[in-house]
Image (cartoon, rainbow, N blue to C red; front, top):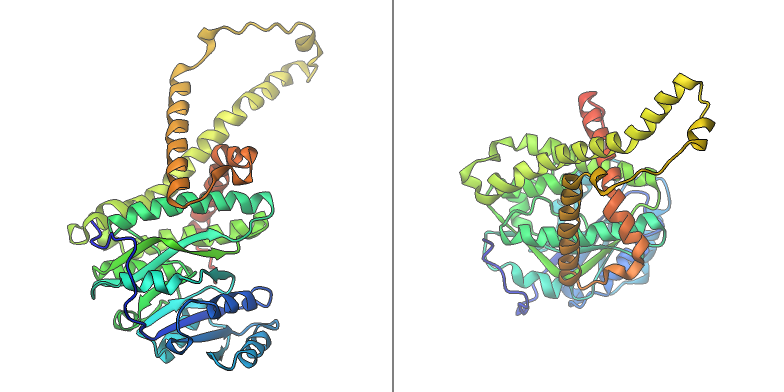
Length: 388
């Protein structure tokens, strides 16, 4: 059990902090991200902001330089490098970091003013290597972004539960706070990993460090607005999770790693298998009646008019599959319970975006995630390479 359960810890010191924004072609969101950092309720002389331009081909570097000029009273530096990926960008900043704590902030995310005030007090002892905020979707506009909003809310509830068992397996890019010395001690970020935030969390767990998940403060991040962008993002996340669990397979069912080895590591792998099974099952039973009807129509050269003219409705209660109805009802009750608990723990209103949106999420969003997992295993089999 995570020993660090107190919710309202008070910051009694203001240690120096390094905040890093790795950026690749982020001209549209970088300024907003930087302004959220400069608005932090924390003494500006107690933190530095390092913007790492990872070989952007747009105006990201120019915007960063303008921000530095506009805010001379803040310690902001621009680090430029050839395009090497996010891991390399973080390591470049980590080598130059002056802070006791090292913070990673994606260039499409916006941090709450009270973030450092709320997070730093949870570094209660040397075994706490990272503290994480609650992550939510920023200002969702279209239906796809709103579906992701629900997904994030529910995932935060799950992460809070896992945090109580010290079973957090990913330290996301939006404002994860680390001990600088610990990151250097375990060998920096993996520059050749497609999910460096998940890999570094597994490495911290492999060294028996503690990762604390908070529900306050919040960090908002911009979600993909198109199906293609969302598929690409989730494909990378799920593929990275699978490959990294295999990389750290020594932790699987290893009592040395406690609940993390026996619960979280197998869960990451099984989640993909279960998602594919649910996807294939839903696809099979959803399409089976229509395929059968088309097959039967081939025997009459698709002359379906006789079927329509002689159609009779002969439904009885005995025609229902009560086992299927019971399973479906049970899953629905569990889902509603989890969503209700998520609503309370994240201080959100789940009907915020309408009954239709939440219904689509509950009944159909899993099909999309299942399709992503099918793509992940297909990519792994054919050894497709993917980069940040």
